[in-house]
Length: 379
Image 1: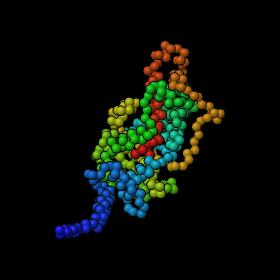
Image 2 (image 1 turned 30 degrees about the horizontal axis):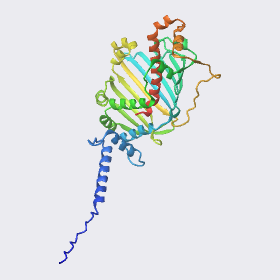
Image 3 (image 1 turned 180 degrees about the vertical axis):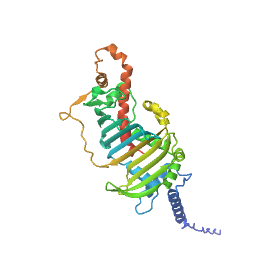
């Protein structure tokens, strides 16, 4: 029989150009993403997180031009890596009569914190003053905390609000964990608080309109206290604010300066002058009567970060150098009230609700301090 001839199969040719095609697609995608970042174009298939990552990546490359948005988001990212810092907050609220420029109200607070977050240690000082025609002496307080051991000292207090004169002039230590346990309070951890702050920013600020505002903002380089910074300045009208901020904070105009340190890339200061609507006074009960007057209301807010990632030199108050009164929730409440309640079950039963509210207020103050400390590094 005649043998069948074996068919010759043509060898498959490998397309030598497919890697080049994939490379071209990748390069085109990168160019598109870079273009979108520089011109603030929101691509429908790119999430906010990815968009921010690209901004941060471009903002971190030296010797290339950067937009205000890239600089800001890079600074926010770098702030999130800070482990220790000294933070200062200044808030003042002033109401003046439009015709006579007469100060109807002047409220001023100054707060500073030092924190070592990896050790869960915080130290803070707080001052507040209130009064027309200049400031009157007001609240002065200091706090310290390590883990859940909360220390506080009242140097003086405002003439309004709760009567705390029995706590004046002494350091107190309170185990916040014990108070939380006694009240069965569900509190937010620092990790949760940072997430909450970030979510609040995302739910409050429209990032698309923020990009537009930053594109219009001016940017200058300046030397402040020996440090070279990029200063981004925004001036916003009421209409621009309403498009930028999703919630109504009754702000009619705003001037905001963002200071970014050139060497480190950290956002080291924010200064804001906010012209407020009079409706704000109605929400502050003690100032409600001023809302009917023709007045210009101005809120000034400033924050600053110093000694970033340096050792923060503060000590917890300890005996014998400092006398510290260690108190449980009931003992501290008794000290405020100036009477012994634990020996009288009936009297103690009568104040059960007030005791619970007092404990809740104490926990709220401790958590609020953490919010202030975490805010500059939580966005």
